[in-house]
Image (cartoon, rainbow, N blue to C red):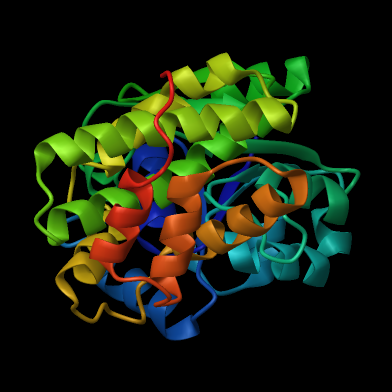
Length: 320
């Protein structure tokens, strides 16, 4: 089966490198024609320093090349996914579409799999998520991810096609749980970055990770997911990685907020938009998610780091 990747950023390129090194011929579509040309001629992506693109990875800006594939990995930001799907719905019909982004749509309050189903009903909708940094994947370091798809036969096919010697995929049919795990861990990574940037310490961060995980499970259960899914790679695994490493954009963004510094506006921070979406969702469904709400307020500069901490610490005492 032909495989293509929509999105020439670091993560999309890293997936392309891993699959190409496994002997597959991969098309990598970049929206920016200059970026595609640079990768074609230099065999490098400036966002993945020190990684040479394999000969079997073909960067392109031609949509015809992208849509010639049977399986398309959608490595686009969560907030732009719907627009891309709506723009190209006719050419995406009937294909296997695998979201590789983590977030909740600010307009519809839904995750990537739901967005694919809404926009391209005839497609097989799936999501690839879990603890992974682009640099690790591109360097061939062992990485395990969750592949969520509610079509059992298609899920097995995708697992076989997208697994490599260093990229191990585990299947689940719980697409809602996988979506939420990937989206909400970014919110918690911002919170942990704020904690460390403001100097609150490792113990406070451990508490945030633990209580943040409880919030993730609470929302997942309310939305019909299996809370146990959040204990796997797409939830707890990703949470542990991104809340403790400055390789995470969301964590670095939180560090900047905690230190009162500016952050590179050109860098996509999925957790910032997701925090706003989750706050709206929790209010509509009357679910108590205080850490998510605090992160939303921090991103809108309604609270300082100290005020957010004081608000969390002053909540009524209760059983764990």
